[in-house]
Structures are given as C-alpha cells and as structure tokens.
Image: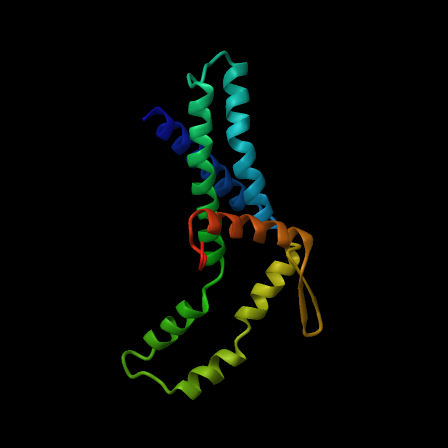
Length: 166
C-alpha cells in the first residue's frame, strides 16, 4: 500500500506542478516539458526529503516498484494530454453532428466542412514548434526528438501488447 501511496503522491505532485507552471506560462515544447517535469519531480522530492532528514522508508525493491507504477501512469497521462490538447477528428465530427440537433448532414457537407478546417494544420504547427517534426512545403518529416518520443510510446505499446502481433 505504501508503494501505491508514494507513486500516487509523486504523480499528484507532478500534476500540481504542471498545473501551476502551465498557468504561469505555457511551455513552447509541452511534451518535452511534461517528460522532464514528471521525471525530475520524484527525484527532487526524494532528495529534498533526505536533505530535511526524512526517510522515504522504502527498500530498494519497493522504490523500483514505485517507479514501475509511476512511469507507465505518467506515460499514459502524456498520451491522454496529447489527445485532449487538441480535439481529435472523431470528436470534431461528433461535435459538428451534435450541433445539427439530430437533423444530421450529408457526408459531402462533412467532407467539405472538415477539408476547410485548419485543426490538422494547427496540430502540425504545434508539433513543429515542439521540435517533433519539420514541414517543408508538402513534406512532413519526423525529427530526432520526435523519433525518441515515438520510440518511447511504441515500446510501451509493445510491452503492453497494444500493437498487432504484440
């Protein structure tokens, strides 16, 4: 139970720090800022606690279990954060259809409406600003930092069997 409580305390503290930082100034590279914040916060908590004379009270194996719980929960939150940062196409379509108050609309109207929308372009711009991709004309390329984040999430997908054949 202590392992769960400490992992939860690490996550809640990280989340509250993120909330405060995001309220003061939204980081330009949000995903990178999340990764750094959520990796550094527990380490700082442990260092400060020890400096103040407090003992975490966990054995080495229990601390490993804290990290084994904390890291996947944090990665899941990053994926959720990325999903809610900008509405997904599915949510945009549902929202648009909901605004028709049950009257619906034609597929051609939907295609025309969403082809004019800039949400995907905005997502590309956010990703480029974060240093994840590079856009040159019609070509979109993944940058090394984007590849690192992609590898992290693909690895976790394989670990949890979320990919076909995994």
